[in-house]
Amino acid sequence: MKLSVGRGVRVVALVLLSLALLGAKRPGNLGDVVEVRYWSYPDYTRVVVELTRPISSQVRHLPANAKAQRPERLYLDLDGVWVGRRFADGITVGDGLLEGVRLGQNTLTRTRLVIDVEHYERHRLFTLTSPHRLVVDVYGPRDGGESLTWPEAGDRRNREPSRLPMEMRPVQTVVLDAGHGGRDPGAIGVGGVREKDVTLSLAEALKPRLEKRGFKVVLTRSGDRSVSLEERTAIAEAARGDLFVSLHANASRRRSLRGVETYYLDEDYARHSLTLAARENGIEIADVDDLQRTVARFRVSETSTHSRRLAHLVHGEIVEGLKRQRRPVKDLGVKKGPFYVLFLSDTPAILVEAGFLTNRAEAKRLADRKYLEAVADEIANGLNRYRESRSQVAARVTP
Ligand SMILES: [Zn+2]
Image 1: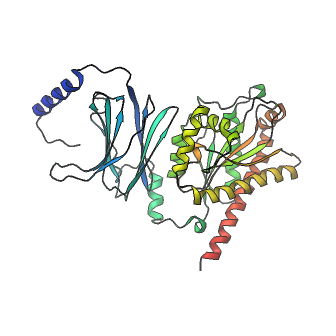
Image 2: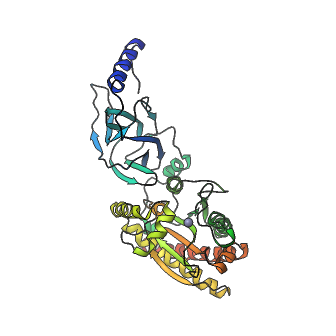
């Protein structure tokens, strides 16, 4: 915000504000703002506020006020949250859609989050736990933003001003998400095999196989890096991936449990996948219901049909293909689950649990590069079959 006031005036104003806010002590039992982050996507900008306590809030919209020189803005009141003056200077976004984000102490027990918007169309709001986050996605036309966080997203948008219906879009870019990494090892299996290593090896085996078939491949991580779930979805959205495949390995207290299962996101879900959903989302089982409610608020139906088809094709190839390769694997089926990384606005997305690290025989297989290459061959076959099914439809509907 540009303030055209003299320095003296500003100092006086600051002192008064500080007295008003800090003259009284900070009340007890308030939560704090940990961090504010944002990502610019082609169609929207995401603002994430991380907090130390759960919060429910509402987005309110204020039109621009020319007289007061205030832009159009959205605001949310965060009751029971203390921010003091930490973010008083605001955070400049300047991506052509949002001007910036400000947080201030509105009352002694309430923080107000203000999002200054250039062009507002609509928004969506959801909350996540572990850690507690408030996520606001602001949609609107974007004009000539200078500082897109993901430059590729801007490029792609220019080439593709309006997205075709999914059925008619060619399938080119696959986003491969090697689960976990860095500080988060994922499941630890028999003999100390770490899920994060298995998923990365599998992604690395899959990448050249897909490229050979003419797919463009984007990885959410290369190397042993910590990547948050938001970052993973951010990379997928920014790359405008046509398909998203998250790679994982399973764990169970029952050592005998083994086999491959493939998940897709759906409003509906099976109770038995809750433990897995909690683990893969890095949350407590008790919090899965909240996540499920969030899923229900998403418009997933169109994408969900495609995700289901993609899941069945990939899963079928893994099970049948490995049998042909004389490496039979137990078929645990295609399932629905509320996985955060599958919350993509417009991309068929699946999560493959390639085997159980807690089963001795499967842990040994999953630590073996040759086996992972065999699995990668079959996942590539499945993705290829899905691409073929889409291009047939596109050929039918395109004159
Ligand atoms: Zn995992």
